[in-house]
Image 1 (tube, rainbow, N blue to C red):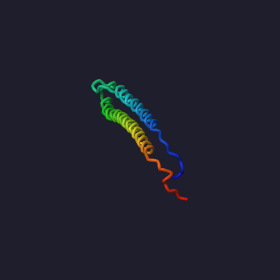
Image 2: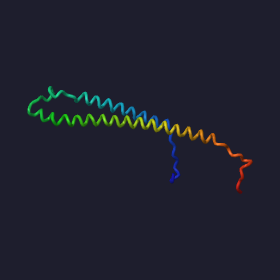
Image 3: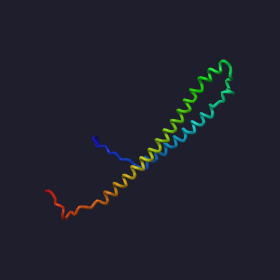
Image 4: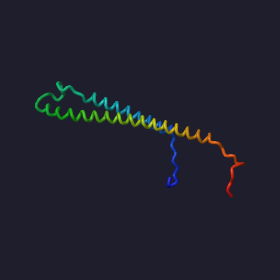
Length: 119
């Protein structure tokens, strides 16, 4: 790096970050389900009634309610995907480290007695 800083990544911590993100995704799924359950209502038996004031309210309520509910569910799916990608990234990085370390260890060592040296 240009500023001489050290970059080091620990694959196990990357995977752990993916697991933590998965826990957030699970909590978001639960929140979406709880929201949908807590705010669902039967239009034929709405708690606000079916009079001339309630009908326009319900006509405005349902589209907005559905947008919020679907937004929370979309966020949960996005978090789930991010978790899976993070775990996969940690696994790929771990495999790359292993493969590179193995390749370095298997590289033939130069014979110091036959290798020409510059003075």
